[in-house]
Image (tube, rainbow, N blue to C red; front, side):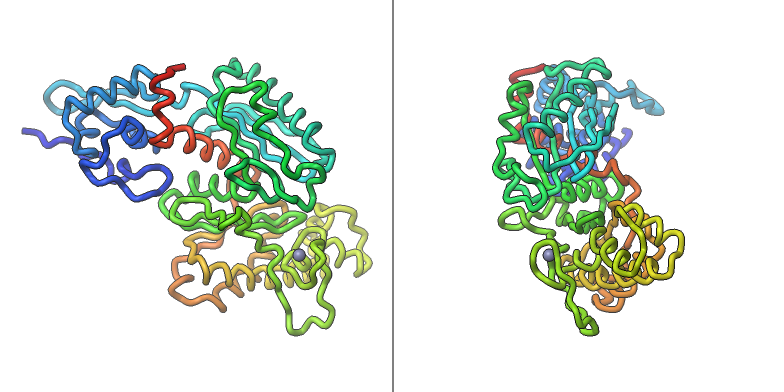
Length: 414
Ligand SMILES: [Zn+2]
């Protein structure tokens, strides 16, 4: 008798990176759906092997998932003998997700399938300080256009995600005391979208969404990742055990305002937050501009400062190298604390990779223990501007398809 084909080992690992379910512990339909969500196409026999459930139970659960269009046939096995067995896969085309990644000066909106694959996207320059009514109104217009472009209606939207450049109370879905987002404190973002859409709305900090996107797309087997967003400000997103680590209040990752005293600095630079000597006061795009202007260079934007460094201007190179070492000392601290497998660097300043990364690597490898650095990778973000939208879409999908949430879709098929 031919052995039952073994499902790949990863198929029993939920995509959130939590511990794999032991055979026999999976009973609910949501747990079975989780087997398919990492892209694995499975036969009935493979589901039985993965879960330890009886053929009758597996057939019943798969029928429920098929009826709800959460899974769909995905080809056939061609065994050397016997009847071909149908494979089933997650039906990522059952509906769509809408996501918007807001920055201080620009936004990116996208419509994605249920696997977080971007189907269509749009961008616009914004000024986040114009306030939530105006900015979310614009997001709403982009969403309407993107849905129309892709032949969808609000009824097809399964979930919405929005990321913002400020601190977020994740459970309440509101921005809290944001330093650069005038008028957004406590604004009811979910309530705004509830006027047009009947689906969950998730609000997160921009760098958390980026961290999750990088983890799931590029480093899905690591589970421990540190993401740095280097732009006008400096932020970090931490993925621990396959989950975004938010801390007790959602404020985790605020590496930009950790104190970075340099013994040879007589004058500690003043930070935007009112303190002195913060990482951001050395490394943030605004700080690079300040230092270049003080050295007599004519730079009117962070991009202009980047261009100057890329062109090899000696002062710009010196300033970005120092920024790399200051940042490296802070990252070394984070590496010692969290022991990530990967540090991913994104944001507009990542363009000066050549000068910035050398300093980061130098400090991290000098200051952190070999156990933490031997297998540590320090890489530039390859997803770049799409890390945020992809990460948001995947976070929203995880929330909708969490085993205890799937029941809603089974009893109420779209
Ligand atoms: Zn500060």
